[in-house]
Length: 175
Image (cartoon, rainbow, N blue to C red; front, side):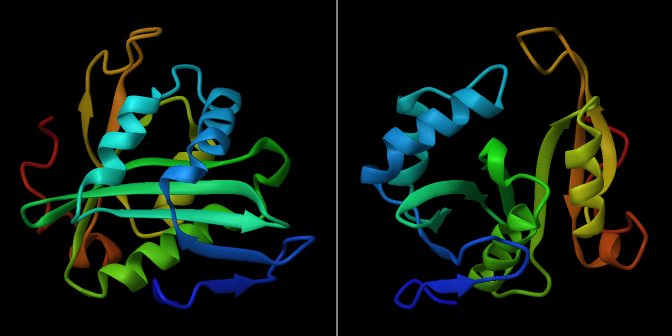
């Protein structure tokens, strides 16, 4: 699954899903999904900024020419920060987020890569997804979400977290 040859997946999806690079022309569909899925959606400018970063990985999941999910991941020095992952409401809980994450890991192509993210403490579906993917909670950002002041769990996916420890996570418990 490379940038030049998008992957087509069937899995649990009613129709084939293509995973490819997210591009600027996808943004109207991205914004529509973002507004349906998140209580505090990103602005168009935030997506444009992330797409303009040459070291990031931005992926689109497309079915029947319709964007059904996306992933935004930025690289900061030696750490990959999963900034945004969304699947449209009618396609959730079918494994598409795991497929997007799998494509991210394949494109990064480094078994020692370190990934981090923030997730709402109340978002148990997402937390369980990330735990299945090898992420482990390593800290809390108090009152991180501006809409309701909810805390965010800081999660990491590293060689150690995949083996069940936090040994290679920077400052576990501190955020």
